[in-house]
Image 1 (cartoon, one colour):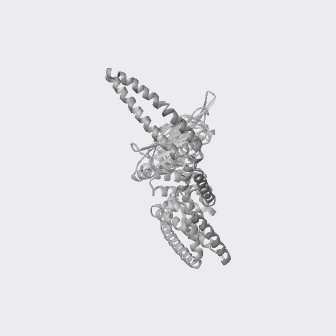
Image 2 (image 1 turned 90 degrees about the vertical axis):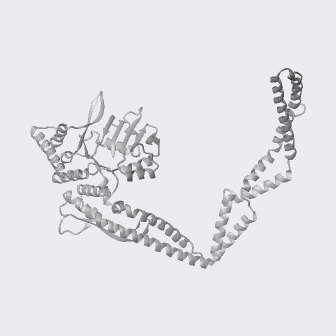
Image 3 (image 1 turned 30 degrees about the horizontal axis):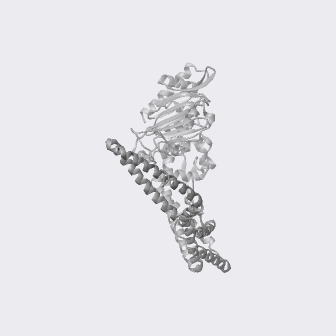
Length: 558
């Protein structure tokens, strides 16, 4: 559940802090007051793309922070699946925005913006002003049905997707398998040549790395030997060794006078021993590291051969050997071509059979859940003043398969008795689409763990008794969900459990939007403004109070 929204330096808002409770929250205000900014801020908190123009002051950081409270075990498990750490049953989504960058955090940990959206989807569903238009696309209908049936359909859809991937791969392999005898013999000859070329090289694992190391040593032999010779002269006889020997003799003459001097003499003897060992090992290394021109030429030739194979077959010896295995497998296929085609034909048939079985299972479940979904939506539509509505879902079968199955389904509706069932997109007006989407959303919300539903101007295209029906439906939904609604209609605003007024004013030459929670009396005044416009008479105030009280009476008798 959304508990708090903090917004700073965003569009017309300097800084606002909004607390949310249970029930129906109404946000109202004059057109242009900034109601859409609140919704935009929520979208930002959920990872939406940020427009720099939204910053009120480009020289300061903008901040949006949404605090959610976990209300169920299903939400907790979903957060665990996303590796989100939870403290005190709260999840805090924070978005900091500057002109140059945007930082997203969940409970103080920086995350990608996409992760914000995934977490937000666990807690709330936002229904925007134009979302009902998506109902004109029948693909959306199947998405809504699958969302309703996801508890049983989701795992089968994943199996279906895997089966479709295998089927399309086998189908493509079959389509690409058609070779005549001439083409097949040509490919066999070419494969045999390539296989012989790789196997003839007798490559060894990591051989190229070892040869390149030897090549570097031999090609830099002269420089290495010069540096080693210089080091040997500086540390050997005539150099540091003689100097240390003289120092030892000097200390030996006086060491008997002080125990500390004896300790220093012992350390110097150790240094002398270490230096002698170093010189012996250095001398041996120089003896073993003499340049061998024949060995150098052999290594260079071998590296050239390996690099030539890399250019043709892979960037490393391991990749070349993988290529060899693939070519050997292909050669076996071509040499036993008839058997290969026979096996491939059986594999294609088996893949199609499994895919068809998955599609049938998914379609069966969809049709079962569609009956339940449409029945519940029909009841919800009747609550929304569709008194004689018939709402169903029609299923047809596509000509082929997709990763989503073979169903071609869409919602069908009849609004008036005696009329035929017709596709939803051909019948419903904009206002009707809004109510149909509201019905769908409320039914879906009852079927999942989402706490918060947000409706942005669900009142588009409605008025009068229909508006009253929508307000009553929102109030009923708010019994079990937190509902936040932006509206221009007093019938809907009157039903608020929490009513917020968003208004703008000019302060010091700057336009600023603010939001405030309204008391009962202030809510009545706001309803009067929505009813009467600029002129608010006592009659309008009385009407607003009556509307508020009637809404309260409805809620008390739900």
